[in-house]
Image (tube, rainbow, N blue to C red; front, side, top):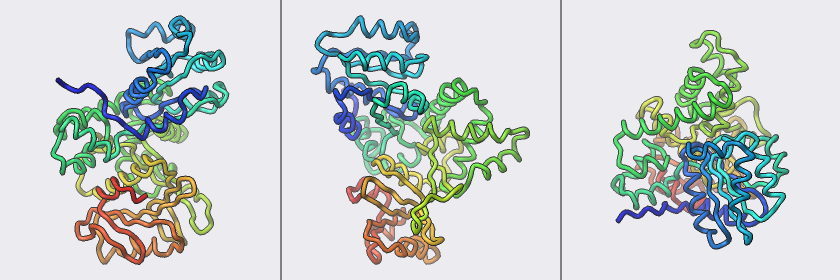
Length: 401
């Protein structure tokens, strides 16, 4: 008999556990199909002994009648239990003025509220003000490499020693780790997710046109990890797309960030401890999207390595910057509380790039951990003047940071 129980994603359950019953709404945000609803299902099971559970999926046609906020409110109130109720609402942003329902339930008490949403406008200053700041955000990302291993143990989509390579080529959307797929099948499934994001989170919500969104996204995918600026991106695309409005392009780039498809990393001047403008880099939230749009390209292996290291740092709760130390670039400066970690990424380490990878880190005279992450088998695990180097797969699954 098939085990239908979801694969645990413990880090999110641990995060939510801190907020259970605190009187605030727990909001699961993140890119579509990253597993928000499944995590909420696991939370629902975990707290089922703390009151009655009411679960409404507002993406289902059968619940279309609940897209009216008054009907949604009445439905919840009619089904609440006297000894406490846990309210779970999937894709709540589909309900116009949904925040008025949440605010009323919080004010009235008697319920612990959990909601999901695919667009970060869910947490815009306007909405958060209307909820009076009474929320906790749990940002859900596609699977990390560790989580891919857990999914593979359950679903057996590939050989154990092929998980890392599959993760790099297909990304971490849970859907592609539940069923064995060819590259073509995986990329088609991911492209369908991408189209859903464009249609529901961008075109429908903001009125963005598909061509501008798609050309912008493809440009970002082609230039992940590269130092750029929005103005440079616009100048390039305006040469390909006649009539491209600059303000509209800037808006589209922002909307792609708000829909959690891409992430922007700012440069931090390490000597002066200040942000440098307007320099930054872009990364994709899931490498599978890049491959679905552009095809997998061996020549981009260095970019793929850097992108997955970025995702791992973000998965672990670090705030990530690109570093500039007296003109020397550091791929990542990751900060979490009073912790700092420096990371350089290199597909291969040669005489030509040795100084860039190790020398740039060595110039920073502090005691925080410094890593060079590589895919070079000749540099599997070791130390150069206090700088640890190791293979990417080990770095992504280690407890070293």
